[in-house]
Image (cartoon, rainbow, N blue to C red):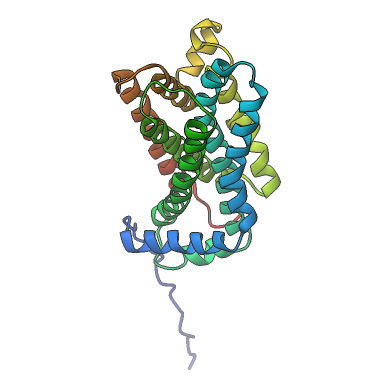
Amino acid sequence: MSTTAPTTQAAPTQAAPARALNAGRTTATAARVLRQLRHDPRTIALLLLIPCLMLVLLRYVFDASPRTFDNIGASLLGVFPLITMFLVTSIATLRERTSGTLERLLAMPLGKADLIAGYALAFGALAIVQSALATGLSVWLLGLDVTGSPWLLLLVALLDALLGTALGLFVSAFAASEFQAVQFMPAVIFPQLLLCGLFTPRSDMHPVLEAVSDVLPMSYAVDGMNEVLHHTDMTATFVRDILIVAGCALLVLGLGAATLRRRTA
């Protein structure tokens, strides 16, 4: 009498249920990131002091031409936070992945949207402090002459920093090392820096370059700063500019959540 060994049937693989964005998980992630940053004073110094030091340097480079500092300084108030937040966020997220922390977190009841939103919340809090320091220093100590409200200047600087955070989270998905994350800066940031109207009005560029600049978010960040610089009241153009910058930040955050990988290849 022959016997047949029992066969083990594998349980059908079920796709993980989609996890909706949860406020509790998002704030817990943000608190964890802030606790980690608290133990990294060098990163905090980079985030908070470097934009201020660059603005002080710029002020005294144009010591004999205060109007030039007014024109360039307002634009750079939006550019510096974007660049620093891009660098720090991309490297910090990549470090989480290469150390295995990201994989362990996503094995828990934590969705990608929770993780991205938590990071955006934590770095957004730092962006508020960073933008407030840079704007206050420029307006009240360095004598940046703006026609509009400094609070509108702060609002644009904050949105620019959030955009830099979103871009950093997004590009970190495509980098295998911290060195590669830094190398994304010439590809993502430098073209925007050249075409945003910082060095020459966008209308004076070659029509092809002007058309390209029309789809780059940094162009609207600089335009928004210039609106505050030259107009007393909040203009319709200013409202359009900040809505575009905010919309781009949300769009890039969504792309970052969609492309987030648990580990490097």
